[in-house]
Length: 299
Image 1: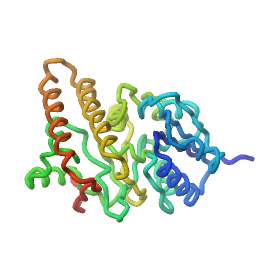
Image 2: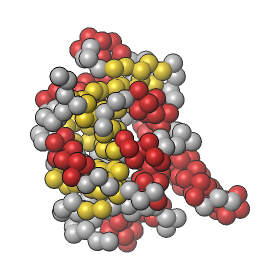
Image 3: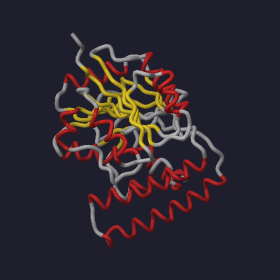
């Protein structure tokens, strides 16, 4: 008799052959021990050797080969629609599993049927903690984002750190990172799939917000850990991704606080910030993101 398909691991890939291979090898090394699982890679028209890699080294992986870059949400939704697991894991290509993570997260979901979304602790390669749990964004919070130029100033850096204090135990949160997000199928069936207006970024924020508005819990579990490599993209790719991020921020606020004139100052601020960041990035040497200070969780 076949074991229950407990987990569907959904990975969206775009020209990330090396990261994809390391990610899949880590799943092989530390697989779930309770129930069977499947892996679905939705490839966004990669022009590297990603598809050849999957055929050659990971023939058991289900592959969706998109003809073009559909963006994260649309590509992930295509995989979610054909997935069969009780739970879904949205997993970035630039992640690596650690021992026991799958079982800790599945146990968490099994023990509380009202959890709709759950996220593990994300770590940098050197073991320092990434800010993977935070409150829902406000217009003020935009000034304190990870890549905001204002966080180069001590005052705003301290303010930003307070938004990213690290929980030391399992806790309910406003949102968890989409870099490694466990989702209950019953919950996403109820509220709907990822919003495809978000090409890249903010789809995780939107999903967590809709989960909470529908009465589902969003939970952070720091006992389960996944390594997340933020570095590894070229300067050109970072600038393109950052532009998409700014566009998605505008679309997020336009969705929940609609109005052209209401959001016109936000649009202007986002354009100015992106242009300033673009100039700044030309002179900034490539480096991993800044660490954050450990601290106690605050509501």
